[in-house]
Amino acid sequence: TELLDLEAGLSEAKAKKSTDANYGRVDKAACWMLLSRLYLNAEVYTGTAQWGKAAEYAQKVMNSSYKLHTAGKNGWSAYQMLFMGDNGESDAAYECVFPILQDGLTTTSWGTSLFLMASTYDADMHSNPNDAVATNGTDQNWGGNKARPDLIKKFFPNGNAPQVNAYNMAEAAGDDRALFDGVGRESIENSKGYLGDFKDGYAVAKFVNFKSDGSAGHDATFPDMDFFFFRVAEAYLTYAEATARANGGTMTPEGVQAINDLRTRANAATKAGYSMNDILDEWSREFYFEGRRRVDLIRHGKFGGNNDYNWQWKGGVKEGRNIDATKNIFAIPAAQVKGAIIQNPGY
Image (cartoon, rainbow, N blue to C red):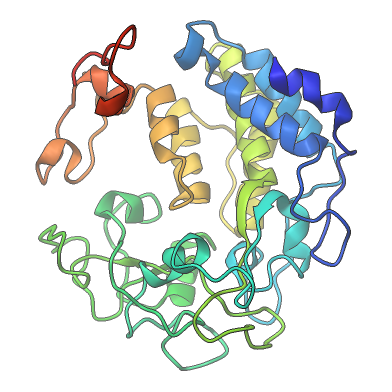
């Protein structure tokens, strides 16, 4: 209700770069994107599906001046340019409906973009096709968060991901979104699943502070990469899934085209049709490490409860196991459980 009420008062949907007025401020397209996200998950939230409205508001974003970024530059793919130090200055900015602004001099923080870069890199990772130096474009590499084997298998279903650097990995996968580093790492076939060993398994090289024009960042430590909180690709996948669900689980021609547009941008092979599981996999390929996987799994019935979808260490065991359906809802912080507020089931 609040989003529908405030829509009329927002500025018109207009794609912007950092050099344009109001870059970083929400406009009507941001409102449409959030509405489409709420409507896509409405059945989980309220028990009543809203597939038609999810598709309607996603299509509003798709028809606006915000567009998929499709042209690479100087050896960087179009997809990689969404996660680089000049993503607010290059044409990649036109895909971003709502950025969290970052600048190495004025928004110094150990979180946000720096966390995404430093926590996923160690000092051995080489992700710049134009420079032999091993770095993410900052002087920080903490060697913390890495990929589960299950994520790598979204791109290499036969478990045959090569032990190469990120830009060669994408080529081997036939998908520009496969931005993983395998050099000197234990392959996913032989991984022991050790959480404490950053070399055991492949690393995510998605976020960098390099700039597509070859210029240097504003600071050696803190990055300039804006975090694209809402981007147009979400509208494409929302539209594809919502129209399929409204059609009894069968993709519409327009929905197929929406997914194929994303796969074409990634130089990945297109298909004539996609199942609901295929759509869920496409959410993973497009948005891994962007903070939305849990919501997508719950919507598809693949998180808590008795289902056929496990991953390494789900439920606290290496091979994965089902977890209680009550885990589809977070616990209420203990300090807030008082009076009329009672704890959610299962906690």
